[in-house]
Image (cartoon, rainbow, N blue to C red; front, top):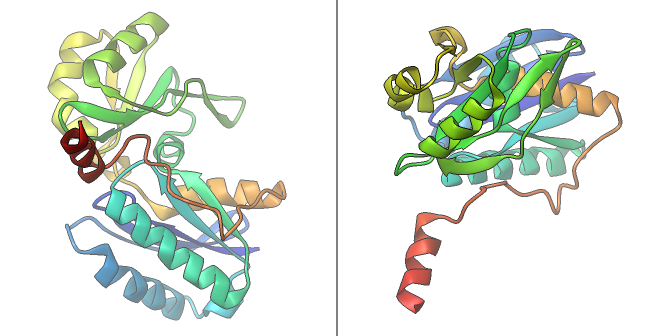
Length: 232
């Protein structure tokens, strides 16, 4: 089975093609370029360079968030268009699951953190047991101090990954005894990690409805919050 995986949930734009347990190719940019401008050319270049076309793809995987509201909408709209045009199935995977999967076989807690502004983060806690990624908390949009308190209660070492590490690394080091951080080459979203998780879902016969699938934001957009304040 060949799948095309796309992630645009953060400033990173990434696409990959996987065939069963093999990554055939991947393109990733982390340079503040507009997803709406570069995403389709990235996909076209990737397919061209590995000698495939959209009709060769058996299924599509996209990130459902949390992350950038605009980025998520662009990515999901792009993938839905490809699915409808090719009549192929869709699987949506959490961006937090994808980040945690970058740290497969890490001992202790795995904690992806995406910056949600105003000292808040999108996060969840994971462990990797018996060759499988296991989420042990809900997906959360919480203040960084609340996350630290939750981790302290677990009484375990923890490895952080994601763009939130750049902003909060000093605070996390000062607050937690056994605190580690993912290396640079793993510390970004990549479509191959997302695609691996999506491939597992496809093999289990799990897919999403193209018409009803939607991003998971975890919190309201700033525009929605400001509008609600005006109504009060």
